[in-house]
Length: 459
Image 1 (cartoon, rainbow, N blue to C red):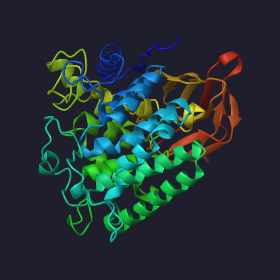
Image 2 (image 1 turned 90 degrees about the vertical axis):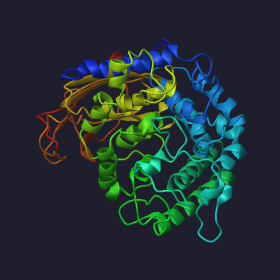
Image 3 (image 1 turned 120 degrees about the vertical axis):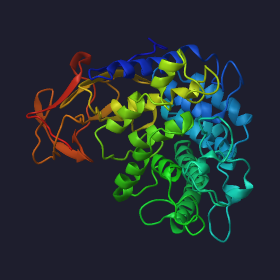
């Protein structure tokens, strides 16, 4: 079954048809819109770009059990980089994506020094300990819907320009963290310690100069008037930099902006921040999945739905209604389906472990299959129950789905969990209720079923 692309079922609700159509648009793009490498677009610039790979490869891994395709493309673009600052800074993230998919730090081992240099750590200021981003080159911060490298992000009130961009500083700090972990896995403890120390020092300096008490400013707080707009909040939450006690307010800032005017590159980080991912420690989020569901199903100008309706799309475009008609990074919504709605979260390289915590919003049923190195993980979720088929070599923590059908917060004291009909110890994971002990496959490969003895209610 290697190479099979799986389509989830998400029903019912008035928007089930839209949701399934948007998913199929993305799935078909990943199947038919790529050849032997990821590209900007096969109808325009037929070469890999770091950001195209970051998004398209992450999406394709979620629907196809094949890992050499992204590894080959990553290796090529690492040797032949493109010009935007953030694209270069993505280099260690490409290595991390490959490491999590394969369980092997081969790319990081092969391109250690290049990954290190592409973090842009060489632009560190001696006085402040943060990066001077004014000398790096052309920043994108976000790729706007018009697909032009202008100061649209600033003009639209999404970011504040300065000589110390928060986004590139955050990219550097988290890139060093990921590289340190990969070096540890590769057995190079000296480099792991060195990169980890530099990441820690930079994060401390970022906090000193860019933290306003509740969120990260767009740059040094005194230089940007204390402004903390959507881009700074979105990227720092995605990178796992926000303290747990401030996540709800930062998450709300991101959710309230929506997908408007942020393009497909921005949509990947938007949905990743609202869902959590393997690029940062798994963090708890305050909603029931409604924000992700809204982003995937809305039908205004900045939506996949309007592309289907107005442009008669069969593949995703470069940016909503602009650019090429076969742009694989338009599949950024895939992370919303799998990380957000189905709640399939990889917690160890090679999918040795995972956490399954669906967030259904108003859906009454959602199911899908995630291919992994160890086999297929099949999830069927509905309010108050989840069924998961697991490979026998994967340890998975199962959590009851959250749903807008639930009206009050449940806690472990008032909830009795049943795993395959047998009472198990429950623990609180944010607003999810989870089985304390991880599980593997059921007898004869049967699905493991988590329910509660009474209807579990959430806010």
